[in-house]
Length: 471
Length: 162
Image (cartoon, rainbow over all chains, first blue to last red; front, side):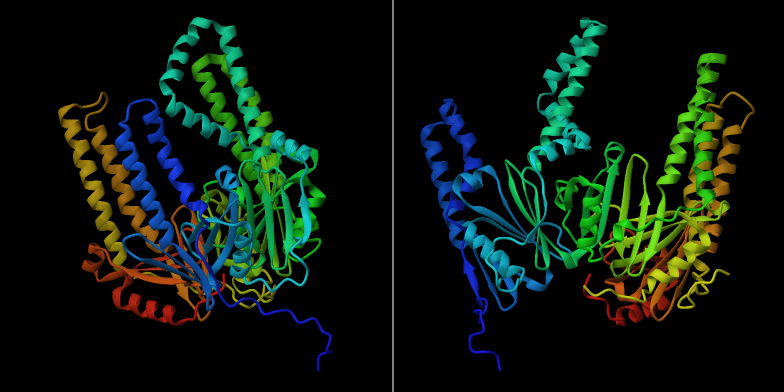
């Protein structure tokens, strides 16, 4: 018999339903109507016609808003919408992987939140509610994740990570977001291609010094933009553990609230590029099962954009519920793997020297000096390889410029494959690839250049894990 | 023999149906013959400097040689074994891969038959798991055998949770 003064929590509401926030009426049409308005202002568009267009758009928007409804009932999330045809999507709560909240500038001006639901095997966000009042969004999120009624007020769980702007600056300075900025430049080139083309034509006239200066300025600009992009994207980064999930808050212009269910975590990775390794810093990412192809690449999976090696290790241990996992010593690969890499270095040096000798005559033989840095690189590549097996986990490390250490729970393995090329077969080496459920953009962890006998034994063993860690 | 668990050492792998080798030879010939003919035509009309017919000879040796050798090698390597708990597939000529697919991880099993497959009485079996990318592929199975395998695999209960 429970004591009479025991705290009795009310049962969670059996049914949550609603429409979109009225701000949705304004949210989408605004983007579509701005060009019309601009044209009218420029005098290129008859006012009467513009009014008609606006009225039609407003009516359509109203009908769409009236037709859109959602509800949570009977263990499913149901979204109904459609102007002419009625469309209903039913998502069983069991299949829901993530529930993300985000707010673009438009959302924040209107005081609403966008909610996205992703389910197992979805190609795109399966459910998308463009505008909800913040409290409704939070309540719906709780209902969708079937979180237990929180005994403590929703002040958030323990903050595992909280980054200050200074740390984000370090992240930007040491990171590799240049790719994003390069893409932006590509886009700008498409839009303003003729301008850039004319600029480039003028370059030879400027002379060598000015050209070099322009290039340097260009590089600096790209670098600064990359740093700024990192800081803005991760502004106020906070990672909290709340029950069965991890919550990530970040962003300055677009505030994001992402949720990562712990039971969907497939692999945890610690990444250290050359600069960060020298500074003792690292980054932690996770692969979550069945995530839709993300537009931002790995961003949505980052749990720690930058932190000390010790912080990264602690976080890994926390996520996988195995403290000290990241501190395990990794065994090196057999020496044959080093021979293999040195062989590549020699072959590359020989090819370069031959090419230089052919094009530049005997002076080209000096190119043979390139064998020194190449050999050092090969040795570093060998040293970066490492592996370890502990009960329930496999750890694989590789990579020279970007060292990646993957921690794979054995019960998350889908398929294990052993691969050996002709060079590897000759040296009695093989690569063991651990296939997990992951986003298409990621890569499967692999133990590269294991001794072939060990690889075969591991292949048989990992396909039938004796211990399944229930988490 | 390394002292690993006797749990599941590599099983004996059986080859594919021999007819698939003939099928691959047929496909390779279909590709190689036009190349040789084209090279011969070029040689006749606009011969390269050097010994006459060098281009044709190269075209016969290289693509012809590959067409003859590769299907046989491929057939020798491509093997599989279906056990109670897992499916082993070995494949590859230069890069040899041995893949182990635990049956509890299976999500879908498909059989496919291209026009040439039907001609030779063969079918292809493809199995999918939650892992992204290539899953298990078994071309050149006897059509009836492929169907039997598919039913047997479909009967195993897949692990619903990822």
